[in-house]
Length: 230
Image (cartoon, rainbow, N blue to C red):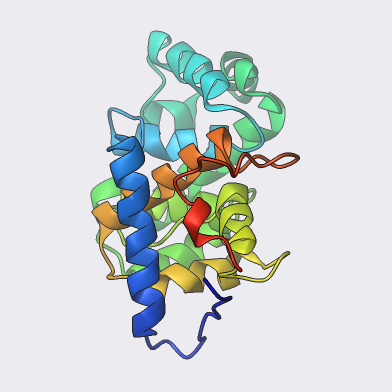
């Protein structure tokens, strides 16, 4: 397979679209459905998107369990909770003081702009909502798009370190590509489908963890071995 380029004109490249879908099908056949994103409610998914910053999901699960046990895993209760108490409950997720402030900033955003209604928030124009989320302290593109995709069911492809690593090594994006360059690869060339974006991202994380490791990729026998550039 020769190196491909992501055309940045908003129009899909049919050849590239087919290749991306073939990769998706290959991953799906290898690993099956991943059942992402973990969470019982949209707000839990939002909180998880903040808590997972710079930590493993197993640590997030412990923090979420603490919030549930303390009956604070709702927008209104978390918004009104004392900051120190919130920080102590989410300690397992790491950077707990910073993340407590970020969670409070996120709930303040929902309360201030949408009168505390997630229904009203999710009904907003997705571009407007994304812009608003990016204005919240501590909410970057990956966290904002995780909220949009998993909590709001809006078709925004989530890009993380695994995405960049896998698709740069396979010649789809340049090494060191930025977030939005990598995101355009998918959003310009795949159907705007929430379920597809959800499953595709989860499968990328799976192969990134198991095969496309940062220091020593395990290419031999990898489901995507045949897609490596010549």
